[in-house]
Image 1 (cartoon, rainbow over the protein chains, first blue to last red):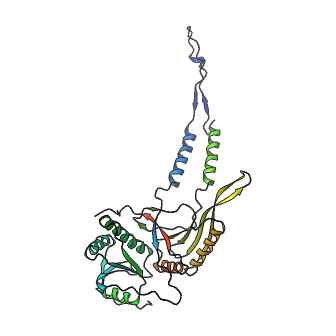
Image 2 (cartoon, each protein chain N blue to C red):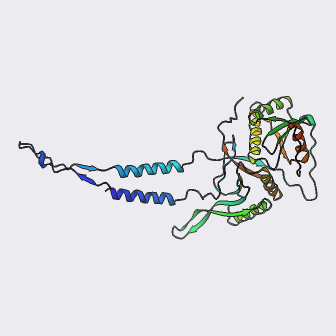
Image 3 (cartoon, each protein chain N blue to C red):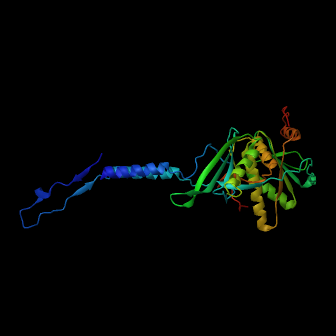
Length: 189
Length: 154
C-alpha cells in the first residue's frame, strides 16, 4: 500500500550564496486509498438509500353481518349500475346494467367514469374480479376510482363515489365468454 | 497515516453495515402502483404480507418502552413479532398480534396489507374475508407511487 514520501533533503538544492537553507520538509501523502474508501462509502449510501417511500391506500370493508342475519340487499336501478369485470387474463370489461360487457384499457377508465358520472350523478360502481386475476388489478381500479372521486370533488365538494366489490360468479364468466365470443370454460363459480 | 485512515474507515463501514435502520424484510414483494400519496404509519403496525406465490405472513412492528438499568430511564425498543398464516387463519393471527400489542400497552396498531402485484386476487379476497370475519374492516394497502398517473389531469 501507499506510504508517506518525504521530500529529499534540501541539501542538494542549496546554493552557495547568502540564502538560508530551506528547512521545510516536503510531505506528500498518497491519497489513493482514502479516496478509494470514500468512494466505497459513497456507493454504499447510494445503493442503500431508498428514494421512493411506499405509499398507502386506505380500504374500508363493510362490517360483518350479525350471525344468522343476512344483510339486506341494496337495490340499485339497472341504469345506475356500472360494473367492472376483470377476467383471468387481467382484461378489464365494463358494462352498464345488463348490457354486454366491453373491454377497456386501464388508462381510459378515469375518463369513462367521469363521463358516466356527468350523466348519472348517483351512479354506483361494482367491481368483480376473477379469483385468478392478479391483485394489482384491484389496486388499479380502486386507484382510478379514487382519482375520479378526487377530480369530481374539485367541482362538487360533497361528492362521494359509491362503489363496492362483489364476488365473481358463474354468470360473470358466462357474460365475459359471450362478450369475447369464446366458449365458457368449465369451472367452479 | 494511511493505515490509520484505512482502519478508521474499515471500522466505520463495519458499524454502518451492522446498524439496522429497519427490521429486515423477510420476503421480496413487488408492490402494485397507484397515485395515492398518503404516507404509511412509521411504527406500531401489523403488516400482512402476501408474496407472489400467495404465501401469507403476519408481523407486528412496534416500538415498546423498556426500562434500561444502565441509563436508568425507559427507552424505545423496536421489536418484531412474526408468524406464518393461511388465508383462513390470517384474521385470527392478526387478533393475536393485536392482543400482544395491547399487552405491551401500545394502543391499537394499524393494519397494513402488503401484497405482491402478481399475487392472485382469490388469495387477497380470502384474506379480506378473514379480516372482515374478525371485524378488522379498516386497513391500508401498500403501493408504490406511479408517477405516470396524475390526480389533477383532465
